[in-house]
Length: 194
Image (cartoon, helix red, strand yellow):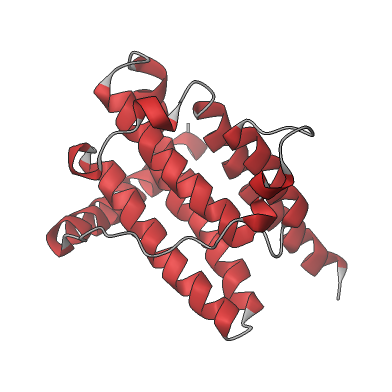
């Protein structure tokens, strides 16, 4: 145990918490009963995000079964910090802020965000109990007077979603991520050199 290790864990937790906060901020006006878009009607990028969450769900559930808590931590950290924040949410912010509140583009994004956050909080609840509990209450509109059985601690882990992953689509997005990474590096060098 060292100050450096504690700083790394603190930074990872901050990234996870900020990702949850971003999700919640963009779901404030979303009612899943009225606004959810069916999987078949989601935008391709939202399909990709849900497929990546399915990968995380499988990895984390398997790690819980094997008591491999470091795998769970690294999975959350990478998913929240890289897959979501550095890529998906970075692209999504324009769609969320410029599309009309009832537009299919915005509702598609919010449908994916809702499904991911609901499942992510369930996966986090055994370890990040206070963070996941508070976020769960916020996501579902629960408060101190809500029945106890609405609590995240009485919810089941998310089960595998019946989505078909299109391998060609996933390959296409993997290539786009590589290209974007190279462009981002070139932009950082240009910014540094003014």
